[in-house]
Amino acid sequence: MNLSLNELTKMATQEVSFDETFFSNIEECIKYNSIGTLNWAIHTLTIIRERIDVGQKVKYNDIDLTSDTYKELLHEHYGIYVVKGVYPKMALKHKVYFKLENTENGMDLIYTGQEENKLFRWIADINENESLVRVLPTNVVYIRNIKLDSLTPFVTEHNSVYVYNEKTGRIEEVFE
Image (cartoon, rainbow, N blue to C red; front, side):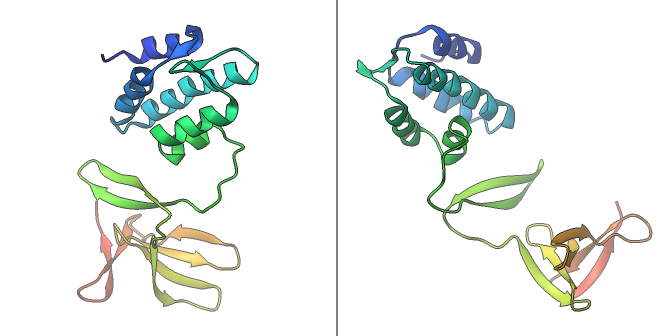
């Protein structure tokens, strides 16, 4: 049974007892990979958390939910992004990593779990404080300032960007 986003939100505000269908429907909605849908899911699941926090009886498969059991339930069904959204003060026991991937529609930020990955690769030092680095998925060149802990796009006089060409080892201007 597929429920609409509005129906699921209404259920979150009114229902006392939830079953697997409710959480599966939200899980299905999240698969659309839209930040709006993710934020909606977090909002809806937060409604239930807030109800539990103020002492309302909320059940899952006829078992009373506490803050801890609800958090465990969320961990079973959703990724850390959603759980952390519902419990923003929750401390993570590990670092969480993402990577950028080129797609037809632009860049996607992909959750990689605990697997560390490099987003930038060093090209050359300009001086003791600055170096040139490139973003791996796009090869766009940035100036990294170590003292200021900043990244600035390396922009041409034509307001274009520079891209690192791996085959030639050169930095080339890209006109758009």
